[in-house]
Image (cartoon, rainbow, N blue to C red; front, side, top):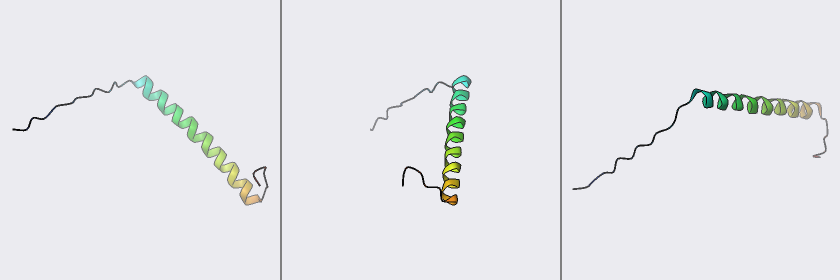
Length: 52
Protein backbone atom coordinates (compact mmCIF):
# COMPACT_ATOMS: atom_id res chain seq x y z
CA UNK A 1 0.00 0.00 0.00
CA UNK A 2 1.51 3.37 -0.99
CA UNK A 3 2.41 5.77 1.75
CA UNK A 4 2.14 9.52 1.31
CA UNK A 5 4.29 12.04 3.06
CA UNK A 6 2.56 15.05 4.48
CA UNK A 7 4.65 18.17 4.03
CA UNK A 8 3.55 21.32 5.75
CA UNK A 9 5.17 24.70 5.35
CA UNK A 10 4.51 27.68 7.50
CA UNK A 11 4.82 31.12 6.01
CA UNK A 12 5.21 33.87 8.56
CA UNK A 13 2.64 36.59 8.00
CA UNK A 14 3.58 40.03 9.18
CA UNK A 15 1.76 43.23 8.40
CA UNK A 16 4.96 45.27 8.77
CA UNK A 17 6.78 43.30 6.07
CA UNK A 18 3.68 43.34 3.87
CA UNK A 19 3.47 47.12 4.13
CA UNK A 20 7.19 47.38 3.36
CA UNK A 21 6.79 45.20 0.26
CA UNK A 22 3.85 47.28 -0.92
CA UNK A 23 5.71 50.56 -0.49
CA UNK A 24 8.74 49.17 -2.34
CA UNK A 25 6.50 48.02 -5.18
CA UNK A 26 4.84 51.44 -5.39
CA UNK A 27 8.25 53.16 -5.44
CA UNK A 28 9.54 50.95 -8.26
CA UNK A 29 6.28 51.30 -10.21
CA UNK A 30 6.36 55.11 -9.96
CA UNK A 31 10.03 55.26 -10.96
CA UNK A 32 9.42 52.99 -13.95
CA UNK A 33 6.29 54.86 -14.98
CA UNK A 34 8.04 58.24 -14.91
CA UNK A 35 10.95 56.87 -16.93
CA UNK A 36 8.57 55.37 -19.48
CA UNK A 37 6.66 58.65 -19.76
CA UNK A 38 9.86 60.64 -20.32
CA UNK A 39 11.03 58.16 -22.95
CA UNK A 40 7.67 58.26 -24.72
CA UNK A 41 7.66 62.07 -24.81
CA UNK A 42 11.24 62.09 -26.15
CA UNK A 43 10.31 59.63 -28.92
CA UNK A 44 7.16 61.54 -29.86
CA UNK A 45 9.00 64.87 -29.99
CA UNK A 46 11.89 63.33 -31.95
CA UNK A 47 14.54 64.23 -29.39
CA UNK A 48 17.75 62.33 -30.08
CA UNK A 49 19.59 61.16 -27.03
CA UNK A 50 23.01 59.64 -26.51
CA UNK A 51 21.63 56.21 -27.45
CA UNK A 52 21.41 57.15 -31.15
